Image 1 (tube, rainbow, N blue to C red):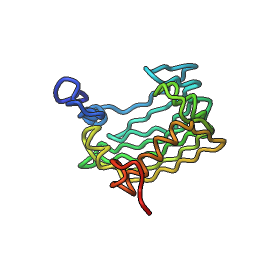
Image 2 (image 1 turned 45 degrees about the vertical axis):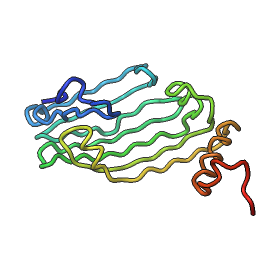
Image 3 (image 1 turned 30 degrees about the vertical axis):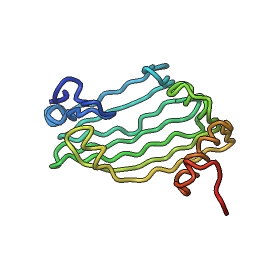
Image 4 (image 1 turned 180 degrees about the vertical axis):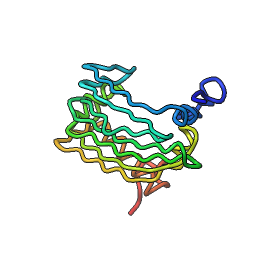
Length: 178
């Protein structure tokens, strides 16, 4: 079906209840290749995008999509088996040597963190909608930031949260007797 259940399907949630295009996957066999110098979303700019999708017998494969994102190398491998009940999805994603400061400025208008970001994630899940697929997702993500910088005001916020977590009684008192 490919649409959402009602309106945008989000019901105020971050991830909408958007149906995966399973009927289309089962009805079409073919290959689509796409390349673009630049592709923009509201918050991200992908450069040198190359992707290839193949659908055969209800199974979608993307081997691999590549792009540059925030001066880093992005790669995505995707396998969606629309014939399985419930449908199964497996993915691998990597982003290497990305400019974390630029990525945060573009997506969150934040200057709190900077550094070189390496992200590697792999997972598998089942579901007929984007929300259920993500809810069922199981996998691993590794994140490494090198040449890092954290603004002191962010460290102060983290320290306050940490203190509140380990010493909840300290919230209302100006000090703690030892």
